[in-house]
Length: 165
Image (cartoon, rainbow, N blue to C red; front, top):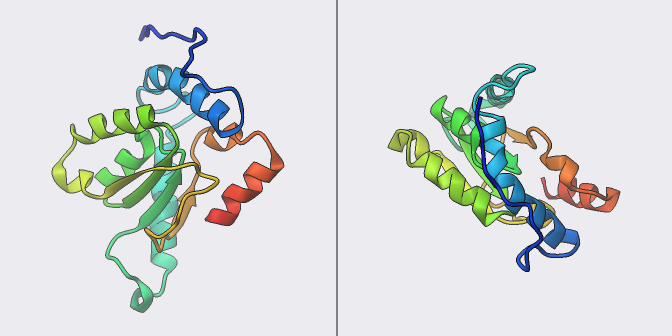
């Protein structure tokens, strides 16, 4: 059992609405996320599913049209890198987008603990998933693991995100 201390007290740093509200929730969540998901999730390891999907999508591509020699995945809501790092360790390239500098800082710390070869397969991008520029592709697969898509509270925000992919 893991215990984690965190502070959800109101702060002048936690903004009031929209993109800022999402960022405020991320600040509180960063301390909890890895403690809640130290390894495979209780309902199964979703990282294996994403790895399998990336490999299948890559295999389905015409080899003459491939611009790279590994499956490349766009991960929106990369957070602390739980999925991205797993995919990179298993030979995938991952462009991970996240709005939270704290989450990305934690992901960078975790990348420092894996092989350099695997770490070089991960590109972290600080951006709102509704507004990011997708010039890191092409990607065989776009994913939004766990509950990151649920942070988009309006249909308009969800549509903006899906249009970016």
